[in-house]
Image 1 (cartoon, protein in one colour):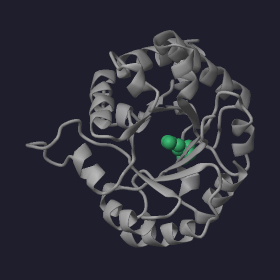
Image 2 (cartoon, protein in one colour):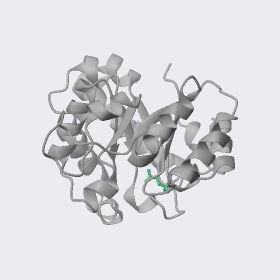
Image 3 (cartoon, protein in one colour):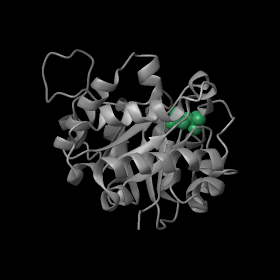
Length: 248
Ligand code: PGA
């Protein structure tokens, strides 16, 4: 059985004070079978780390640089994230791919480096509206998966999390339909089966992301291949995120 994962990607929102206040609210939420994860901005991580110790809330980072240390001005290493008790790191979010120009190869390095340092990568995949209209969704996702997971042994692959986030659904309020999201999640599971065999593929959690909110989370969770959500806007409000978590 795959444990459901409800992950909040705060993006470049919530400074320290706001972060502390949101986490205080989330600590009051009663734990259930699902895993609750927050991915705050780097500067909030030390305080967040202290606050979530011994609670049901897991901590993750939104990004990292795939080297141990050194002359990489402005970057944060996986070892630094581990020291703050981060368990997860988002790799290859579409905003990093499209705004910061990150390539599939660079994302592959992050996935490998995260695993080497004991962090669980949440590998993001997803097509643009144009690619979808051209019927290229599966081709794009296959390429993103194959490159990011290149040469990864199944013992490592089975621990990672894949997020399917159609870019046209992110921050737009226009989520994919649950049926469309399931079709792609099913395709992803099929690709994982091709790469690693069924036993491993069945262990990998697949999240849907893109305008998830309390009003639609149940539709996504009812799908066979969707194991949780990667949630942006709706993770910034305690009441909404709590409701999403409780509905899972
Ligand atoms: P959204 O963002 O929930 O605000 O659409 C999701 C994401 O980018 O991970």
